[in-house]
Image (tube, rainbow, N blue to C red; front, side, top):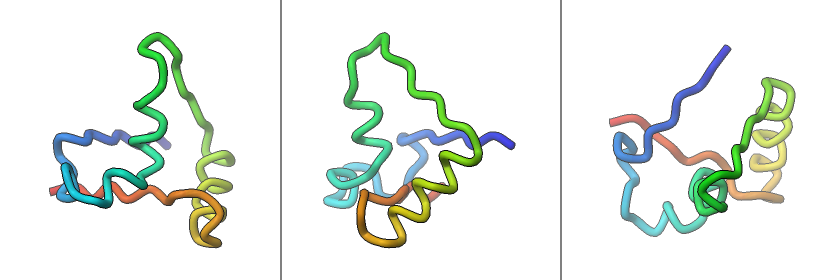
Amino acid sequence: MSITIDCAACVRLDTDTCDDCVVTFITGREPDSAVIIDVAEFAALRRLGDAGLVPSLRHRSA
């Protein structure tokens, strides 16, 4: 399973939602620092987001 997230295709681009998006956090890192998560980590991030402990993935394709 893979997920492709393209911020340019997100309907919430350039809104207040961007400021609290986990993708914005990840992409705000140093240019050469890769972030790779597996399915289990993705599921954990989703659970943490659902609990309000981390910003959730807010990407919605246009």
